Image (tube, rainbow, N blue to C red; front, side, top):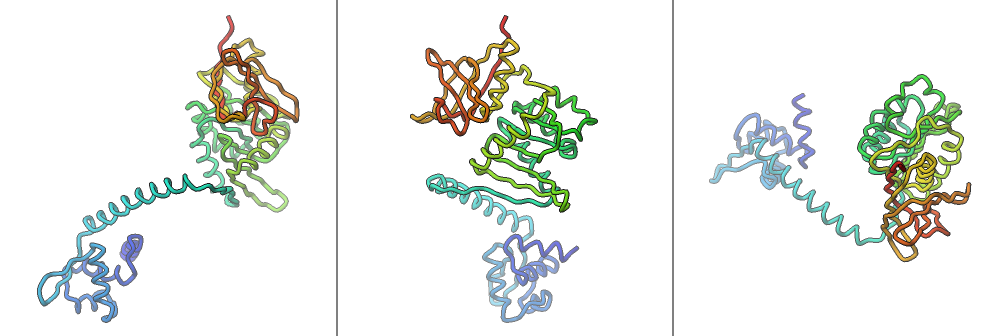
Length: 339
């Protein structure tokens, strides 16, 4: 135990010999160089270099005069100073990196392969905890059991949570999910998919024949678009609603097809819709608020909706917008019952 404690001083930049010298002085009090060589078991030719290093690091002190006596600076004092120095350096380095990297044009697709099930679950959990606007996912029963409280918490803090479950979840109590999320049931099993804020995705695969479980985690926009398209056509469309979009203060979306699903659900049930769209046009970024007039959907080609702002009607589409006026990045949607 004693050795383990002192070995951890390496985290503060101490070499093995420096640790031995500092340990000897901490445990035995002030010593001469000859005593330190004996107590610490360090080579005589190295001892003065070690003293100088430890003095420069603020870990030991030396007496004045001809006969040098060395003593350890107390742990609390010595290590607190190092920690404070490193904390200041951390902040300084982080600020510098942020300033410089923001001015550098770069393309850095993020792609991680994971084959540890516990790590996969934790990564997905963190993704859900940090979601800002939208979670689109499909869940088998074990993952549903593990994540349901995190998904409910996300929905309660205003994130739009869209879930597809499979037949293996038939006997699981989904009451709390029904009251907070949009829920569908797919008749057969498919891969587990998680798309969060249209910024990061994880797809988890169980290869039963090879008894393998693995996942791919990525932030590359084109890959997310492809996975989103797969989810919509292969996972979402064959599934049946268990709970639909309910009235709440505001729905937030990053994806056009789920925006259209919500818009059609509310309009078909007699609600008036207003929305705020943030996106891009040929002339740059746009941020408008207006009345949602309806949707314009051609299967396999487009999922778009119409928003009227003042006297102008804009068509709004998703990532591959070609003929619409606006490529949507965010939609804030409010529904009000028509009296």
